[in-house]
Amino acid sequence: MKKFLLTAVFAFIGTLVFSQERIAVFPFEDMENVLTRNESVMFYREFSNEFTNRSAGRFSVVPRQEVERLINTEAAFQLSDFSARAKTAEMQRVLNGTQILSGLIGKLGNSIRITVSLYTYPELVQLPGGTTLSVANTTELFSKIPELVQRIQNEITGKRNGAGVTGATAMYKVGDIGPAGGIIFYDRGFIADGWRYLEAAPTDFRAPWGADEKNVAGTDTVIGSGKRNTQIIVEYLNRIGVSNRAAQICAAMNVNGFTDWFLPSIDELDLIYWNLQQRGLGGFGGEAWSWYWSSSQSSFISAWLQNFGDGDQLELFKSLSLSVRAVRAF
Image (cartoon, rainbow, N blue to C red):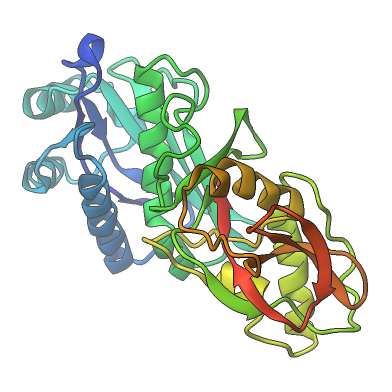
């Protein structure tokens, strides 16, 4: 028998039009026994706690005890069982749900993939949207719980506000505090390649860029290239045995449970300067020597950086320890 996880029930309190609508999150089908039984229980508890903690003012969470009592009564649910008269009658009596949040966990190549979808109840018609997350292993899966919860809450909230395909559409503007506790510095107006917004981390650190006279081929300067730049730099520095450089530290950061940080490209860094620093937002250094590294290499021995005192962009030796502000895309 296939095992299930994330058996939780959440009640949604949306805008005035949807104030009576409730969403029930039912078992996620673990298609290939990715998690052990104990890991499934732990994942459910952590997911539930995270959802509750992030729900203030937007969602009302049904007590877990009510969920577990229902599941213990019925043993195990599958999506195909939701329309069965006896089970749905009991579910409706206990939960009064009108929509179901559920999904799948499986393997894709060497990675683990979790997909979350929203269905009408009891018809089980899948609604547009949802979210998908790929991770390398179960450890990363657990570390990504905050990101997964934020994504699906954005989807649900966006649907209720008429935001269309992405729930993030109606939620943020430049200068707002982002999901990870940083500050939004760019909204491109639509979602593509899995993101619409760029969020700067709450604080700086200082580090060198890399190793002088070492060519890191393939970095770019444009908006949207910072994440790939960082991957290229990290892979190269790891390969030559260099550590504690700007891109490596960004990629290893965990801020409020979010681990998808990267070193911005020079064009992304320019957005931070004009959209945040010039508006007095973000707590950036504004002195003449406040130089911030980008992930854009300029030559074998130098990389692009930006002066947050006057906005000038220039090239300096990679071995210099300068300011760094990590960013993330969502």
